[in-house]
Length: 280
Image 1 (cartoon, one colour):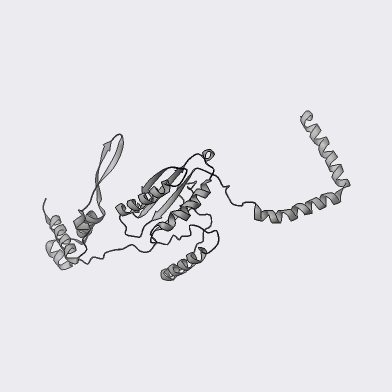
Image 2 (tube, helix red, strand yellow):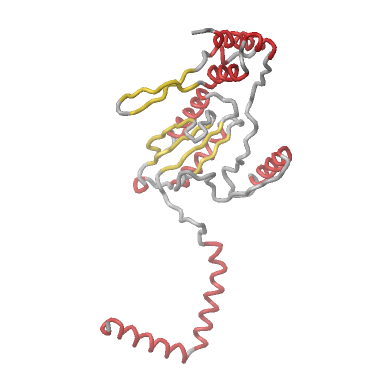
């Protein structure tokens, strides 16, 4: 240990002797270093995580509430086709409703880039180009953001800066959020400004003729179960193929779940009530 520690100790003693004999030099150098740190704060990049080129990013798309799975898929595929037209894009993967809630109007385009060593443009520059050339061409009712792939799965919104607004009045909260989003979008350098507030989904309220249902022996739960089967579908069984298990869902035909008039809905309810009364 003395072979290693001895030279270090002797060098430290010589340095300390030199510093104590020239204290004004050390104080001056410390003040210069402290003053130099002020302009450096505006030059050196700052952040909790270092910027890196992972060769991948994603485009998140949220269609208006009530958009069908098929319509969302068409929109996402169109965006993915435009993204693949960018230089250095290797491939894209489109997923629809892959979240925990299985939201049919939510899509994600996962973009894979070529190796960083084979391109002169960075991942951030390609993302900026997607925001500048692709996003403005999409319909205004779509919510689109271009972001890095989250490093940790299962979290919430992945953004560098986030603000949280809460309050007891939902209508006032929505108004303030929209105003804040519009103002933040005017801030230089702000991109992908959005809010997590989602308006109510379109719904159809049904009123059951209870006297008629009671006369037919149909319970309210029977009607609700029938509507759930016709509109949302129900898992009835599973089957095995290639070592994988797949769920089988049964759902009403489009002419039944897509009824728009009161007469067609009433006919659907009458058919459902008769089905529940059948002994088979």
